[in-house]
Length: 520
Image 1 (cartoon, one colour):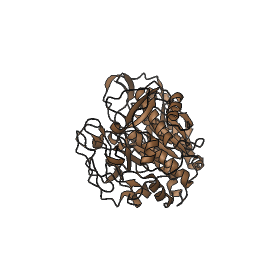
Image 2 (image 1 turned 30 degrees about the horizontal axis):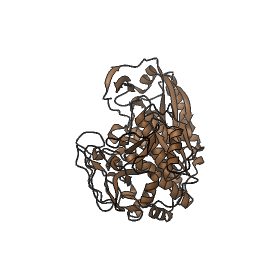
Image 3 (image 1 turned 90 degrees about the vertical axis):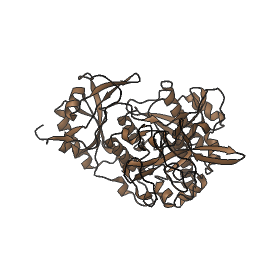
Image 4 (image 1 turned 60 degrees about the vertical axis):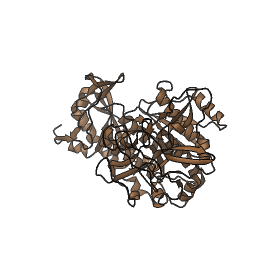
């Protein structure tokens, strides 16, 4: 240990104290696994040539500098009898294994057990500390704390009753017509979906698509860490999984769907995203994320690591869509400040807000989703991420959460109000559901059709959306707000706004817009 300098706090590693009930300390001899996220000297996005994406296989090619830090890590952790158990150099992840006591000593933390809603979680508070030599290598430490991290952005309709018949609610086939999706079925495309719990039944998939007279899509489950396809374990998460598969699949019935199941922790969420991006077997070109939490609920190291992963996704041509949240401008923080949801606030993906959609006498009436007691579209201005170049020209309103001139969201929207929601078949019963979690798979299905027509991946679509000032490809939503009972929200206006973004899709026009914009 003498060869290492004095320890200091790892930037971005501060964790808030868990709000549940303290019940004691974990057994110091219990063995746990922890994930290290490593810094990189390589920047894939800088190697992306205009008009071309990097081949996904290029991510597998590791350089000598990728292996050099491993000796330093092994030297440090060996003094605590902690072993490097799994090394994923191409993903810049290293897994280490050791006892609770060893991890506490190596990272200068104290772990404690808390209970919430009948579940016991291992938690930490404050910063992780490491020698400077390791801080030149490591950007984040994940797995010491395994509290539940994210929420499913799903809302049930009021007084919803399960039934054996499809309810009078939207499905993606209807919405594809309403939103003028271009012709196509997503053939040749693979849609990845991130899930942090629950599972799906093959019988539900078959029955749903037969009801819509659609071919049954190929759906594959991929396990990440201890996550797996476990239907009937958590009815709420099962509903989220069913919604994501059924919306994406009905919008692009010939696309392959790959569902990445991971634990609902910072570590699990990060691992699921990185796994999907680097998946050279299934090669998803689109990724849908319906889970998230307010930026204030995350460690900075987690947000930066995931944002780095989304930047890599953009470099290989993957389009990523994330739900913007269902609790309005306050994002379920329940204080008197504005908050936005992460990962939707990452500038390297497309954030999806929500509307209320009605069809009356053949006419479409669409306003921002807002209900004082039953949810509202998320949106606002990030307190973490700077305003990206593609938003520099916007006349953005002031940030009601801080003075930061941050990234505004959402970018796009679609129907999300459960009052005008989606018909979903879960565990043999039909439900009417909503939430911005429905919007990300809907845009994923739309993008699968667009990619099919273009004959290439669209990648991060945001620069194209904002360079065109949002006029082509979207139906502007100019009514409604995302106020909450805690905070006065933003107002939908002409053009982009932090309520519904550019609005809801005009799919064929969006195809035409992207066809004139070179990827990369």
